[in-house]
Image (cartoon, rainbow, N blue to C red; front, side, top):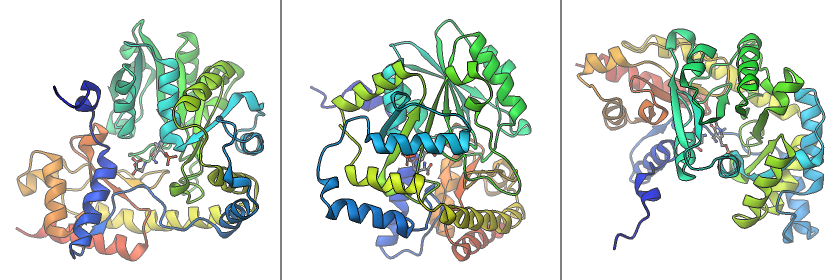
Length: 394
Ligand code: PMP
Ligand code: GLU
């Protein structure tokens, strides 16, 4: 008998995590690999957050299970965060906490999707959405956005993808991998469309605080009462607070969906690790100055590295507005080097230039590669220099 379920046999491994693991393994063999794979801040978690966590361990608070859906104090901290950055108040029963925004997304899909229900996903999109939807027998319906429209879906495209099985629209702005942000007007039109057709909006706002050069993030859930009721916000502290390892994610929205997610969490992970919850309370309510310092560092890296990348022969890149990724179109570069497959091209850059990138294939973008600039400037400059050298070599 085959050991594995069809579910696992049909699933792709996360290409971001796989690319990062491969870079680490090659480094461990002594290769001088520069890794621009993971979307993970290179900063350590700010000291005030570390201290709050240590305190909760030492005073015994972190020794115990908490309520599966999260500590009431953490829900209040999230409520304060929502008031400050989204401009509306949220009661505790509309908030659930879980093990990273990644698991929160899974718990949400498990909560709202019946087999065959469709999730409309504008692509290029983050690598985990499609597989997570499939894991709970939902149907991902990808909508190919146009690079000329900065990889943003239009209402017309969404309407073309809509069927009587459409249940959820996934919106990720600023986007991983493109770094693009939907404008207020675009979101208003999409929000009104979702309300009209009773489609749940899943707003993955995880990069909402990481915006650069005067660009602004608009939360779709803040646009009207009707759109807010139609939206589940997914967010977390990983990116904004340099806390990827702590695994804190949360969702905010309709109380019935939120309690459904709490039920899924109670039967799978139980509560998010208690020490991480105490750390997250300090992150969301304590001194916020470190996050602006980190944001400025990302902005400086983007502004330094973008023009250098744009100079590489065959690389065409739109300047991103947020998140920490560059997503060049490498169609011409592949032609110049004799490649037709972007994953093979990415592997050649790894082997020959010793720079690890993520293939666009995992994001539904067969002509692009993703570089994360959540790493120090010297590494970034050297990585781009090596890629340029690779391209200029015959
Ligand atoms: N959404 C997007 C768009 C992401 O890029 C990530 C990557 N970390 C996540 C969700 C999940 O974040 P985490 O699980 O670290 O909270
Ligand atoms: N979201 C980050 C990335 O895209 C972290 C890895 C992952 O969870 O995919 O690189």
